[in-house]
Amino acid sequence: MALEGFRMVGMDEKTPLAIRERYFCREVPWPLGMVREMVVLSTCQRHEVYFVGEKEDTEAVQKALFPGFPQEALLCLSGGDVVRRLFRVTCGLESLALGEHQILGQVKRAWEKAREEKRCGKDLNRLFLRAITLGKKVRAKTFLGSASFSIPSLVVQLAERFLGDLQGKRVFLIGTGEMGRLLIAYFLERGVGEIRVSSRNPKRALSLQREFPTIKLLPYWEKYEYLRGCDLLVSATEAPHYTLEFQPFRGVWPEVPRLLFDLGLPRNIDPKIATLEGVRLSTLEDLEGIARERRSRLVQDVAKVEAMIEEAVRLFCRSLEWDELFRTLTTNFQEIALEELSQLFRNIPYLGREDQDRVIETVFRANRRFLICIRTVLQSEDKGVNRDSERPKGYSSW
Image (cartoon, rainbow, N blue to C red; front, side, top):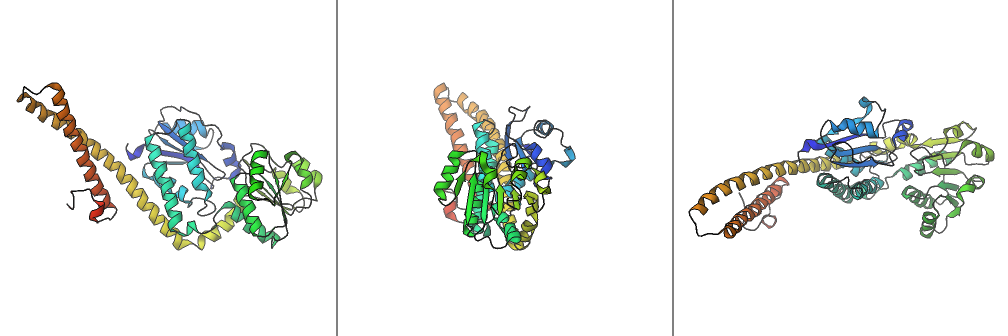
């Protein structure tokens, strides 16, 4: 497939949260026009649609997944820019928390869902496999693999700025997903006195308690009463409704946490709660300050990761070019071979049709093997490899 067939339409954390939450994607329309393949990456920070199709298909995607959204405000990419974007996202360079680990799993799950729903073919399979492989490589060979980069880590840092030492503090958590699990781990590291957890999913809550036996599970529908005495509340769910509503919250105010974090998309906490005296409500957008500070301290490390990404983009794009080249070579060879063999067969009248087909298949097979050898050598040279052990047997140099 030509590189230009890769396309992306979407919005990221630069789009205001109030707008982003309106386009949070739960159901993916499929099939969609003439779009051949499609993966939707929808998280609390971004809503990006990667697809294979023509330029005209971009409009169909916009209308189906971003209805009413100003076209000029959408991020629309094609070709190599799509490859670069996905690689940067998977490596965590486009995340609010620089290098966050969760995005790698989110990209993988989005890809798996597309495959389950028959929206993914060989082209996006190839692109996403390369992106996930690169994400793992970057984390294994750079600072991203050894440091704690995640939205929960930013939440803990911001909480310490407002509450000081978290040791002995009481925390109330709504949500038992991956974000909740990480929050519990970070809060326990800080020595908090108690973690109260409320969830609509009892099975997942019990699983979380097995991992962290000291947490206290509470009935979801009675959560407001259990807010009393807590210092901090975090809500991190994908619920389509508020997990914390204004009227019930005001009913137990002021004996409630004064510092609230809303990590949901759509938003979990009714914004009107922030109007209550003494209550501070922070959202994903409020974490940007700490994220910028962290990024500024890691300029050199980020440059190293960006260099790895650019090299990966170059090699991926080159591999597509080679696909086109070797398809053309194969077609041309087969046409020439058939022409030459037809002439040969006319001079060997005793060779039957079955034997002729066997000769043709043998010649074609030899050609395929030869082209594989050529491609392997070219790839080795392109990656800067110059070791005989990595060349095909029988081909030492050009």
